[in-house]
Image 1 (cartoon, rainbow, N blue to C red):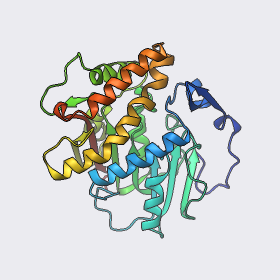
Image 2 (tube, rainbow, N blue to C red):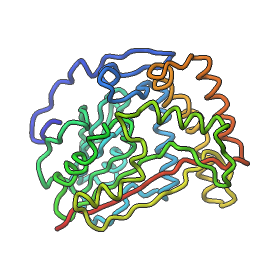
Image 3 (spheres, one colour):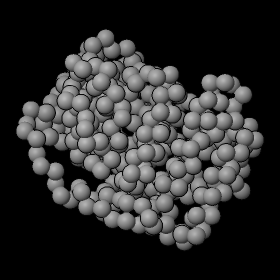
Image 4 (cartoon, helix red, strand yellow):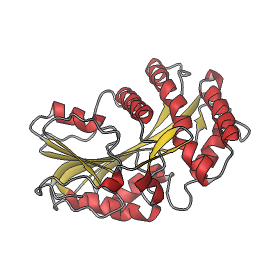
Length: 307
């Protein structure tokens, strides 16, 4: 991670190399080093933008959760398509926004002048100065962070925060749940969840959302608040707001079920492609079945560095 005061460096060609598998593009660097197994093509960039709009509804259009009166510098860990970082920069033109992600392929070509998107591995120690950021966001990085890295990752975040600065963490727990308990081990959604999460063991911790509060407390952060929000996979809820979220999330879910698990299941677990496609098709159908009331637990946690 380049020091913010250094000159811009040419992007290492290793980060740009692409491999195509089963019709989707992947970053060779990330795959070879078992950092990330998610597609990096235009289809995935579109899905991430769709997912970002879903989160807008989930969080009532709030990009920042803790109370921060004035932003000078912000760090976005795992910026993806850059949507959150760009919106923060547009809303706070006086703020400098930094983003870190292993993959540059989905970041937009044109970003505001106060945005600096860097390519690096979040599993490496941060090289940003101590006491530098007012806010650090970390969103959906569980599939990229190695299991043993989490304590030092939180420690790095705390180090680069200003005294009184905040961190906000967002992670999906991909163990599908049912609001009425109707999903069983016989359902394709449950099989998808079990196989997908199992494909990352033992190197990654896809259950880390349930531990975010304890991780922040262990590193001495204060004012820690953690919540689980049911993220409906379709418009099954009788609550108007949650029904609207589910309707918005239906297309994202359809794409997610195929895109996220394609490499882990067909390449790491050697599932035949036709068997995989059949599983995903069944899971997609179940996701949009109102009577199953399917959702993913979405964990959100904030914490403050002591003054």
